Length: 340
Image 1 (cartoon, rainbow, N blue to C red):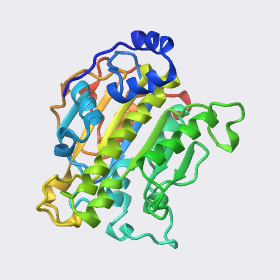
Image 2 (image 1 turned 135 degrees about the vertical axis):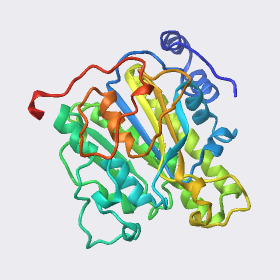
Image 3 (image 1 turned 120 degrees about the vertical axis):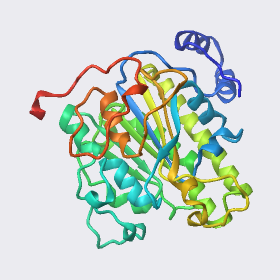
Image 4 (image 1 turned 90 degrees about the vertical axis):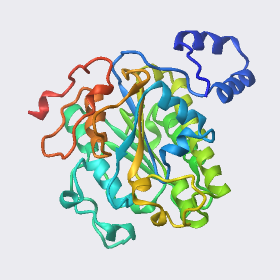
């Protein structure tokens, strides 16, 4: 795939000179701009995929994600849980600990109204404790509702499978509407009144389609394209708000997948290694350009890496560690004194 290395300053100049229809056309053709400055990140976008394998990203059906992987730091050997179950995997990603510690087992794969919220602290809690940083959380799976407790430092929205009209593009539309409101005076009833330090977008449609139609089906490939377009639109939204230069983007898989048309319709029918090996991509502010991550990576390392990127202390009780080799410069410490 051909990549476009356009500086943000030059791009902003071009944007001011072009009419709106030309800007839209350029965004569709070029996708997200190259962003590999050594400036420390003030914002993080965490995009969580489900049912997307590395081979899908390498294929032409996901050119924008392919570009992020090529321009940023990535690995094709990152590991999810084994067996790869979305709800326990999401709990491990959010808490940085194993199933034995957060106790979100396979029973949580079935939603239960009587079940309490996840009790283990998440890195949303630590972001607030260590630096007073806020989180916006956009989910597309009702089962994840119980993984995020209502907190004053987290704005959470659900657009799940119970709503047929909900898809990756719809979710990005909700995010765009949210950012417009929280950056307006008063916040329109949300807890957060500015662009949050961390924005989490969950895009599980490929896994849902694969469970019904199979990984090699045409609908599955179309769902990959929808996810790819949604990722591009989300990154372009941050560019429109003028914060992309100080934004780091992570694209992480909960479970993998395969483009092999011979696989069974159910995701659980795919080989264990294809479902447990997931994408792990970092791109943007302070990320080494075109860097292949050499150390072992688990999805549990994501929270610690996000906190490291923002200059905040991580926690020794985690089973995870920050993937520090992806950074161009060591992030300046910004942990509040209140932590101690």
